[in-house]
Length: 424
DNA sequence: ATGCTCCTGCGAA
DNA sequence: CTAACGTTCGCAGGAGCAT
Image (cartoon, rainbow, N blue to C red; front, side, top):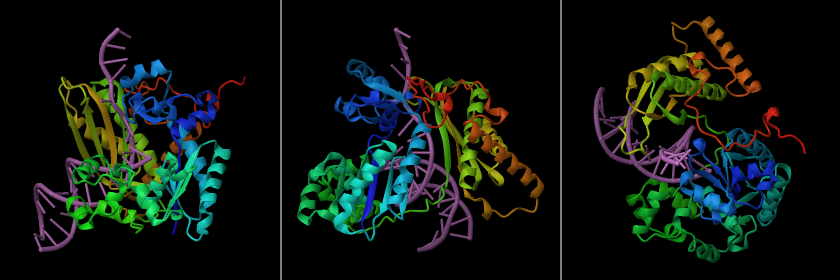
């Protein structure tokens, strides 16, 4: 029952390189929203010592010194490139689980075992040729092992050239290999668990694989026991094809500058609620309640801190932007306190259910419903055709003084004609 | 005891 | 010149509450 995990190399950097060949062979990093921290690094940047999630201001000097090119993240571009990659990958298996923006699992059940490495190479070549993105392929009998095989493919372990199939290795070879991999590299073993495992003398993948399961269960959780079983070739985590609908939708941002006025916060919250509502309708769901929260800058230790959240239940589940914005603003008004410098706010839609499953109440007015659905549909269509943010509701404002910093943006090469660079 | 909801912590990308 | 530290999602498990 082999499974492949296909993962794009330095995905955001690779996307930028497809459209700007000057970025090839030089150190490049992509920064998070607000140009806060590094979220993708080219191999060259990694070699210079730039760490993942490292704040930009901490390595800006190093970047200057070595000519590291830093770019703001361009999620419109990455989302579009991801869709192209996933579409190609879907042709390589009847069953695909899109796990994140840059990786997916493919079910390789029934493929001749001795041909899988070759098949992996074909996958790599096809994606590279058709979209320009380099990928690596890990193959094994469980998702956790496929992730680990991918890790080995990326690092070139065991002579891997972008593809690693654990099914080709003997028990003894795998034991030896696992003995060299730190336990923290395993999918599902994070920082906290790594620290704790180390104190128990469990340092490598092999240590975890062969540890006493009862000990793992009592010291940790059922989750880590499942991880351990998967390392022993026992599948515990199913391939999730359908993409089960989300249970909550969150939209939040740090502000480019701090904000104090309720009016400005209201604009941001209305904007986030509008974005969240569009996602909700995209999913074909309705929300039962809206949670709004705000936060001062926790990193500024000298300043007065305040954070608060408020859940606003709706009289009935809804996907109507005006209803959701109204609820979010009502919640914000209740938790807002003057005299603080706010750095972040957010809107969460909770209690999501499929739209069709909701029972209309006695007080429900079908005519009002149809009117609202029509308006929301028109809004979504215009924003789809003209670009996100073309139409919203007045409460979102137009100035966006709270908008995030993105000083180093590359153009939207694939989704906006107006941003194509001049030829020559 | 049992079953809920709410909240926090953790992990992942 | 200074100040500057991401976002979105699911799951487990404990607390608190009601039955």
